[in-house]
Amino acid sequence: MFAVIRTGGKQYRVAPKDIIEIERIAGEPGDIVELGEVLLLGGDSGPKTGSPTIAGALVAAELVEHIRGEKIIVFKKKRRKNYRRRNGHRQLLTMLRITEILTDGKKPSQTKVARPEPKKAEPKTPGAKAKAEPKAKPAKKPVAKKAAPAKKPAAKPAAKTAAKKPAAKPKKT
Image 1 (tube, rainbow, N blue to C red):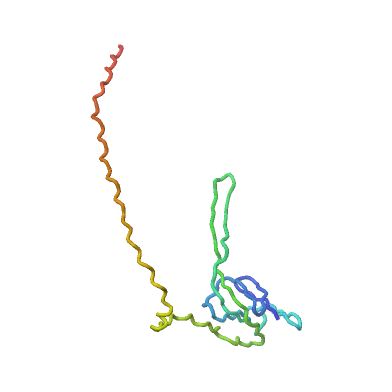
Image 2: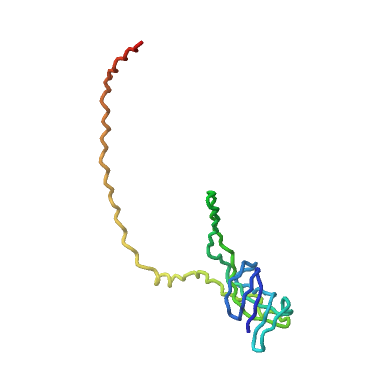
């Protein structure tokens, strides 16, 4: 069985266990999302279309994660006018895993997908700590730093001698 749904101004053909990327919708990862705008249902008995949607049809999906799409470069130019603009855009997306396609007004079987809790660090027992403790590294010897050679004072420039200026030339009148 498959369905054609509409969300975010676009249409998607989905089947159970499909993973699709749609425009960002509200929710947290693990939530069950209901997509109610079902335009077409297909199965063994043939397609069933709505006008515009099928009453009572629903697609349930698990929200996997929120992501951002690839960067798209928007470049505008007007020739011979020295006008150029460059922008980048990354669309906000949501990944959904389709769980079931429902008809006749049925509701999804789950409200939230169970996620395993992250394991917390367990306190170690003293006996286990002694077994798992690595061997102590030998202490490093301190390295003696060599003293930098003393800098010699800069040589003072020799006294400037007064340079004689050439005599001014008399003006011709």
